[in-house]
Image 1 (cartoon, helix red, strand yellow):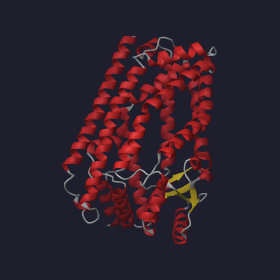
Image 2: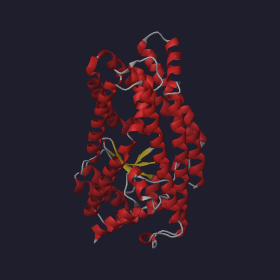
Image 3: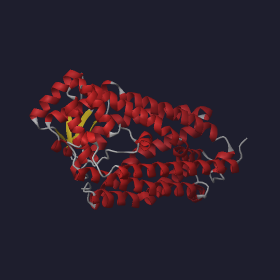
Image 4: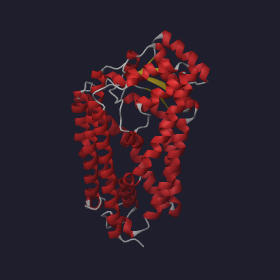
Length: 417
């Protein structure tokens, strides 16, 4: 039987090793980028200037150094909240204000989340208004930043508070099988969010306009018909009001599916290149990647909730994380605070699965349109988004959901051949 002291030591050891691993990977990434900064890789020399390549190297290095500080800050905050007694202190304060155990738990979870958000706010401000602005990407004003934050808070309250209340009620009332009930509610909640997000949540933050370009609409319509894809429409998002980065994506599922292009992407790519990018996204749909990812996430969440159900019955779990009084709310809070520490080693597995899906979507795009047009589009996106062409391979295996630029281009060239 594990003791509280043993679990504290185990947790702190894993946290230290995980943090050191993240810093070591980031250091490798920085050194690898610096070593290849002086010359554009051979595969890109005809398309990307040395100046753009070096901008991407500097931008990626700046973000990586910023992430290293975030690792240290997150580790410190986690220690202070857990073994440092922060969660217990907040719980004692909430328990003194409220008499109902359910409301006590709600208040504790919300207070910790709000305090965490406030402490992390300087990092978000620095990232947006210093780092992104330094490289010419930020288009957001402070007023818009605050407006988005308040809207996000409102959405979190409207959607998150009822969910949290329901979860805590189920944990307290459903006995040993509570985790199955919570999992079912979690699955239904996520599916509902996917359903309502395109029409009701996303428009709170961005403006979505129907695509007006008739030539592009005709090409896209023919592509959708060939691929057997139906949606509620093709929309252009005003991404340029916040950033100069470009992207395209699908959102929703079932009859609520929408195709969304950033206006920055449409301004940069040709009609054929946009068609190729859309074909890639359709490849995700054709191979059911979204469904597969959802199934994987739901399966993992079921396993995590079962594990939480076992841990919350032990005293050492609470006491080892600095909590002297046990409750369902504190168990839920502590578990999901420390879960990223223990699940870090799953990162390469999840990233590898995502990269496999990207290769499959590229292959589908090459069958439906032109691999060469997709290559042209990707090169422009790498250039415009200042994405490094020379990531460290090991770092990439842990963090990158997309294949490295050189690997992906080579794969597309082989399909073209």
